[in-house]
Structure formats: structure tokens, C-alpha cells
Length: 400
Ligand code: KIV
Ligand code: ZN
Image 1 (spheres, rainbow, N blue to C red):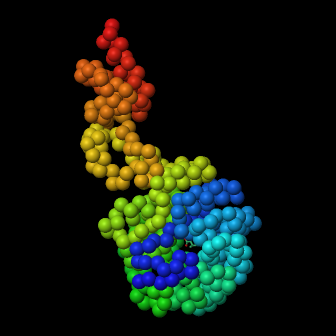
Image 2 (image 1 turned 30 degrees about the vertical axis):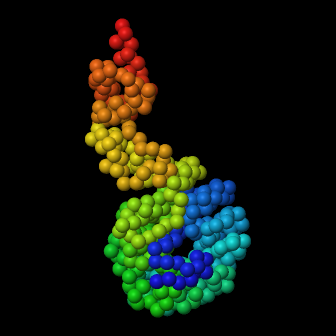
């Protein structure tokens, strides 16, 4: 399938659009709000990383959010700049004004479609929701040809109604259809089923890009995103470090590297400069004051660290034994063989070489290794300085 998109031209089947919502859904999580300067810095970093779309904020939410979206629209070249809007006129007008200065712009408008949300949150009948979809997309098209429509709580929406809602949005001029798993409830096969159904059943489905937007309440956001791609989604919505409402959104770095590492299984080409991932992740941590957990995939401090002797030995022989991507490919300078109580003699010898003690004799090595193990039982991490002190001590003893 290939078609012409207002901002992306002709797209082939394997091209994946990376829609970054760090500055909108990510910023909505408690403690993660950013001021104008911080948002601008982050937007620059996202543009350097090469994301395709930056969702810069929710312009009606506050005067500050409006200003941030407008400033990003003025300053950032390259990615499409997107503003979020509910289905009402005021929201869409505000979003349209905020994104106006952008070279490439998008309005993203949404309304809930699940029975639960329509009844309790919107207090609207399904037919009124369909009318609101028609009106909101039609109005948004007056500001830009690139309009994304989202079915909030899409994964818990009745299939027939989701098809009708999607068809209404396409007829009104939406160019991207986003199906969020708003509450992170879906399993990968649920998301795959939804995208396959929409592509099969909805008239005009071949004229739009389908988009996945998964939350991480069950820790499945990235798995659901990959399953969505396999079922035909061509845009993925994600955030740096996976920040976002509650348990967060699908993490950009994990999606990109899953696609790169498993291109044998998933036909998808994200055009992101992956070696800038770590730098971007660290910038976000510095701005928000929240570090990622050590075992966070790709960007956590332990993502390329190895302590066990068996793993360290394998790494010294061939890094592919225990690493499925190179640390350099995501911005680390190298793998880290951490010296601790699980480390073996091979890694210890290698560490001594790197510290300039390559010539140490076997007796000294054995004694130093024994004392290193004793120290490692007492200390969680044994630093290079500790090891250097041990070896110096051994050398001194030999001379006495
Ligand atoms: O999770 C969600 O449903 C959203 C929509 C606004 C797209 O963030
Ligand atoms: Zn969301």
C-alpha cells in the first residue's frame, strides 16, 4: 500500500512515523511539567534525534501551554509540530492558532468512543459523538491538511462503533487515525485485532495512516506497539524514557531499538538517529529531575553493564554473547564490566590491563584477586581506585 500524506508525501509500507508526545502526554504525569525554556530545549533535542512529529502540548490547557506550542512551532524546523485539542470549537481554534507558525503542522483532535467513557465521562449518546467527530475534524481541516483523530479509550470501544467512528473521521478529512489503549488494558493480540479489523472493514482505510498509542499500566505498552505495527499501524506514539500518565507511555527508545534489532521479524524503518537516544534521555532526566531506573532498557545505567563472571567471560570473547545491540548504537561509549563479587578472574585480569597493570605476575594476580573477592563481599561496587590500591599493595608487599 502506498499513498500521499500531506506532510510525509508518499510512504511505503515499511516507513514508520515516530510521533513523540514527551511534551504533551509525558508532561501530563505528576511532577514532570516543564517551563517554556525547558520545552524548547527538549523540542530541539527531539528534532536532532530525528522524530517525525513533536506533539508540543495542549494549547487550551493554559496560556503557558499555548505559548510553548506556539514557540516550538516558530523555532523548530524539521518535524511536524502538533497541538492537541478536544472536539470542541474553542480547543480546535486554540490549537490551530498555536501551531500556525510551523512549517509543517498538525492538529490532533480526540473524543472518547468506549461505552464507559461516553456514558459517564462525556454523558453523550453515540450518535452525538459521531456528530462531534465529524464537526471537529472538519473544523481542524480549516487550519491544516494534516489532521489526526483519536478514539480515546479505543481499545475498550465496541468494534462496530469503532469502525463507524473511524469512517466518520476519515470522511471528514482525518489523515491519521489513532487508536489509543488509554488505560493500558489491552494485550498485544487485542491491538493487532483492532488494527486488522479497521483496515479490513472501514471504507477509506487505505487513505490514512493508522497510529498506535499505548499506555503502560500492565507493562505492555511497547509489546502492544510492536503488535500494532505488525497489524498495519504506520505511526507510533511514544515518549522519551516512557514518561506519561500513570505508568507512562510506550518508550521511544525501546520501540526504535526493538524495530532495529528485530528487523528480521518486523518490517518497519524508524528514521531516528539512535546514537542520540542516551543524550536525549539524559537531557529529559536533567530537566525533570527524575532519573530512569538502573535496569531501564536501553538507557538505564545497567543496560550494558555485566557483573557475573560467566557473562563477563563471554563478553570478553565476543560481545554478541550477552548483548543484542551495541552500546554505541544508542549513545553509550562502551559496555561496562562492573567489578563485584560475581566477577571472575578473566574480567579481573582485563580490568588490571585497562588500569595499566598488564605485566603483573601470576602470584600477585592470585593474591590480588583473592583480596578483591573479600573486598567485593563487603562493598556493593568495587571501583577502579579500590582495585588499583589492592594491586599497588601487592606490589609493595613483594618488594618488602
Ligand atoms: O491516552 C490517550 O487516549 C490520549 C489521547 C489524548 C490520544 O493521550
Ligand atoms: Zn495517552
